[in-house]
Length: 503
Image 1 (cartoon, rainbow, N blue to C red):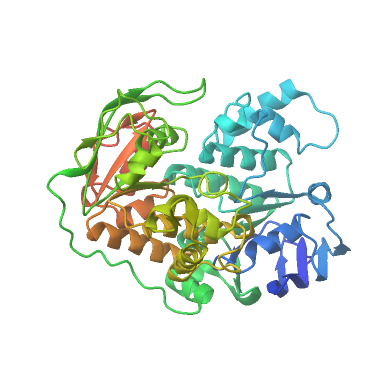
Image 2: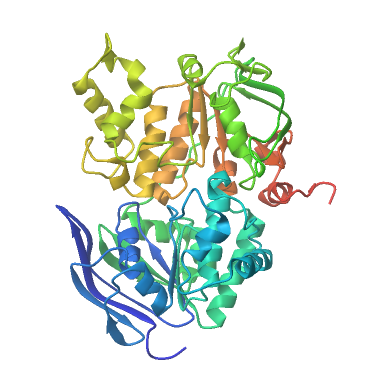
């Protein structure tokens, strides 16, 4: 390493109205260093990274790049310096192909055919496979994340900013990505790594800057500190452990799916093959799987987005296969999709109106008229109960950080006290304290008699809260095994299509 930092921030501040997002933040990143930025949701991490990538201009402070003061006026200017960024909320175009999305970030002329081949080879090398010719709107969230990472790697950056890069990767894929990042660091590339997975931070990162309330409050050496110590630095208090109280499972399943076979809805989708599942009241069942193996198709079938008279789906013993979303919600089934903006919430609408979208049955509408005070009260209750950091019930959904919007969406659905809750990626992008709270809330809801199905690629989460775990791979669902009778390695192998027990 050289004595001169690759990147240095000096007293950088950014204010949005009354909110001071970054308050005189300073940090330094050396060449070849993997540097973590830690903090709760709303601590100012995303704003700081956007400043570095030229998407936001700071109000004050100084940025030095390789010892020289710079003004990063745009993402294009950042890329020309050698800065690449993978956002937690992806910056991709829905209606064009993977290759075309990557080409958008390339300055000057390019050969699309040659670029397509480079993408294919790079994806194979780094264990991030994706078909370059696929249209983006056909891809799952996990596949879109691969596109973002590959787009950055193709630019051969000097500084790579990664925001929650492993949120939808298997343990094996995480190991492979870590190998890639260490290889990049060894070649001199600096890496700014944002993650709420503290064990990953401890394994990968050499230095961590901790943000709290927009200020840099500590610098730590993660490899020498425990996850609990790092969490305490982030939150300022001790993070409680998950309580797994005894549960009484209902005799009859509250949610049943018998032999669902369904062709893929598009050429790049995943067909479901004889999927059978039962979730009882009083238990949490998890479904693990790499994105693109049928999760979105299964969620659409269970939620009622793609009803079919042939689908053998029962809610509390009643057949609902041919019923749509509204009919299933009336019978007590609610769901949280993996896409926060656009499906989980309408970006331009206020939190109050987003609450009304699914909670209107709680007396928020009378004789066809919206009751504004109850609507505001419901949104305020969700905000307070789930610790959502925002400007209040009238804040637009798109104004929230990813983690805070996730807390609102999950909290909104749980506040309905459903009989069956289906949730995809419940704590994606949520900080350690909020993730613990959400997981505990899911467990508590199940212990009140609800049947909960969690679709997640975060195996630590599934093993922490689930009573049984199944794996969805290439559209086929394994038998759900009791949590204590399997392991993360076994589930990870099954996610990759390998029969762990036979192996």
